[in-house]
Length: 497
Image 1 (cartoon, rainbow, N blue to C red):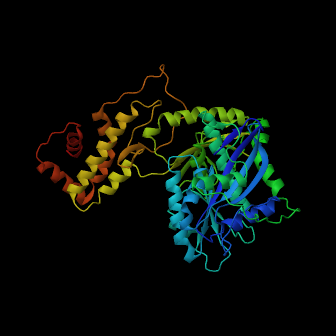
Image 2: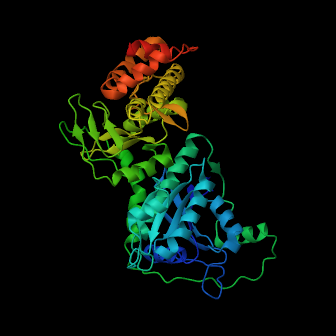
């Protein structure tokens, strides 16, 4: 949907509110409209007041890359019999606010809708915000249980009470940020449409939907107009948030020596996070950990130890301005993208204000089980045969990873600690280096046999302790010779000798 309207010098984006019937979509839009002093247009409703086509609102505020931002805000009909209309509206979204009924009766149905939009957005840069609604209800499900019911995803969750407007603006602002992240990604790939938007009013959208259903357009019912509160300050607040995209560009000051940087959070500007949409969702989850930076002896800043995430900013990753930091982020993002086939997926890089006017580049990587951990756990398998099988499997994955990393554009350390398994394949789960290998820097070479001996020896030393060590020794002694093309068994035999 996102389009650059060159005639009006506007970036037009669409935020779509999705969810089952009576989850609070229309109520959310009307609360948002009231706070932003805008009008909601609803072409038609049924006798129970449920949306039959959509709710529509527009909001203009802030600038992005020198262009005015125009937000089209649309809610979908939730009834199953109107799912065709819902699907067409979701197809035009740049970001989706999934309104989730968090009462026990509504959560199961809401979870089904969430799974559906995840399927629709799979492989796209369309971001999702989960608006956990009805949090004022006495029987509201605990937020941790809500996350579990929704699959434990890193998609951001905002608690809300649509009836009184609590959390509505926060969810919307976050969705706008996701939409702008998508716009920047499209710009980077020269894939952003230009020209007037196909639909720039509720009437045009209604006509398009009716045309898709081969219906004759009847005389429309009078739209539902929501009264606005002219004293609201939310409209100004949102404009300030969006204008921060431009204000941040003008900052250029020296970092303060010895200053403890502020942890990055989901408010970082678009263009300051990679990958744009998935990265912001990861950052939103990490921001809830309430971690504090600690400086290591080598000068690196580290956060999140024991939290399931590795959050690191190198000693030199501090920049005088947002532009300088963005240049470094772009280069690093290219390095990540070039090596994506070997990298674990749950990772992002973020450029965030440090709090003293400087900018700091962070990498955030989800902690995954390493091959070393897999082998140590295998020592306690039910039988020595199963332990040995797990050892051989881990060793084979290590060799496969070494072969795949040999063609990487930077030197990735291939060890039992930096390699794990994802979808049955060996993946690099460690931190990424900050620079690419150049022709003047020859790649260090190590033979498969040396790699196996170096990496397996410490684990074998642990395995030889206690009763299991004797069992493994006996197993190796009575195992008949086998074809060992990779040298794995021969290496294990020599290590157990």
